[in-house]
Length: 357
Image (cartoon, rainbow, N blue to C red; front, top):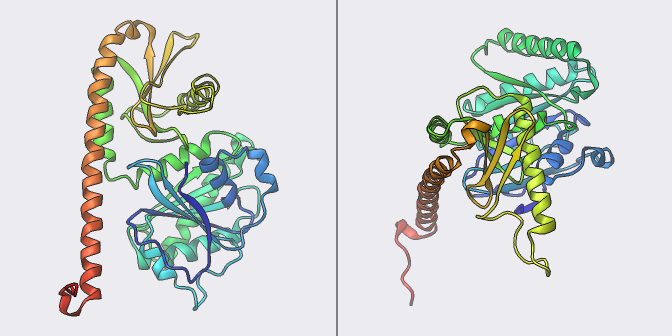
């Protein structure tokens, strides 16, 4: 379901399409490529053990929907990003988020030095970049060691910025592992910052749950299991994990029983819906929003007795989401048309198009 996956040389021109760009940076063997493969290619974490080291910049377009629509650039750890022949300004200028991956099981002093150099250089080019620090491979650490490692990295990284007089740079820190859902939640938080419509989506979810007796709701991208929005109540990790597991169950069962004998059809369409009752009087309710988005709700059994009301409110919610889509698509189309007009003007004398002979 992904547009393409390509290996680029330094001199290849960047895409002219307007998309947020996410950079994956960090030292060699810190786990950057494994993160990308697990989150966006459904690779098993154990399979990543056999991945070869990245030796070129790898770009992937993630274009699942109007909201999950960005580019990921995976940088090899051994490359000197600040070589004079390398145009780092062009890269940072078009970047929405910079994810720096630190191996928590390794000596991270060198990683912190590279982090400081990268962040300070990127900030000078583009102060609007979101700096996201993934303290990675924490599955091998005890709970106490995780907290201590995060505190130490947080302290050292911010002290380095303060010593350079750059206290205004904000770094966000996440404990991540490809062996649990922490990497998906961290990526969800990163992607949400790149969605201009996020406040609108959150407001729609708040209205929906308050009028439906729902305790928690997530708007998921079903391909990557990134949640692009949720309501204003706090996110519980167990709740998020159950939602991801539900999406997997629905897609897997649909692939077995939902396709035609000849394999035609799609395992996820406008009729997709699922109900799972847990043994703690909680009901999980999944409904299709668009061909790439799903709404996953947590409802008490007594509230789910009013399923007709929930379905009516969902219909209104779904209609509103589609309207937000349409507004975004019109804006993107207008921007592309404007870019095309500007290109035409630059390609013709005095901005006057040549008339055909």
